[in-house]
Image (cartoon, rainbow, N blue to C red):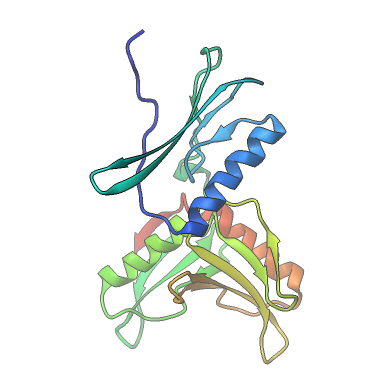
Length: 217
C-alpha cells in the first residue's frame, strides 16, 4: 500500500506541556485504551499488545532531534473521532462593554455564564486572541487546589495553562485559568458557596470551551 499520512501536527510547547502530552499517551497505553494523538482527541489509534519501539536522537542543522516511533502490522486503523463544535453546550460571546473595552464570556446553553475574560481588552483582536488561548488551553489544563497546595486533576493534554481553585476574601470559592506566562486568561466570574460547585463549573468549562462557537455582539 502507498504511504498515507493520517495525522501530522507540529507546535512549540513548554517542557511541562510536552511531559503532560506524553503522560496522557502513557496512561492510555498502560490501560489498553485507544490513544488520542491530538489535544482535541479527534484522532486516536488502538495499538496492539506488542509493537516495535524506535528511539533515535540525531543532530540536524544545528538542532537536536528526538524521534520516538511505534510500528506494528496494521490490524486496526487510526480513527477519526467526531468531537467537533456540535458537542459543545456553550457559546463564546464577544462584546464591547460600557467602558468601550472588548470582553468575552462563555455562556452555557442553560443561560449561565460559566467563564469570562476577567479583564477588558483595548481591541477586538486582542480579545479574540485571549479567547483563542482559552479554547486551546482549558481542556488540558492542570487543576491545582491552592487551599491545599496540591494538584487534583492529572488527566491532561499538553496545556500551557493551569486552573487554580481558591477561596476569596468573602470566603467564596473561585477558579481562574493562569497561563504559564503568569497572565490570568479566564476566570469563573462569580463566587461559589462550596469548593465542589466551583469544581463543577470548572469541569463544564473544560468540556465545553474547545468546541464552542464564537458570536460577536
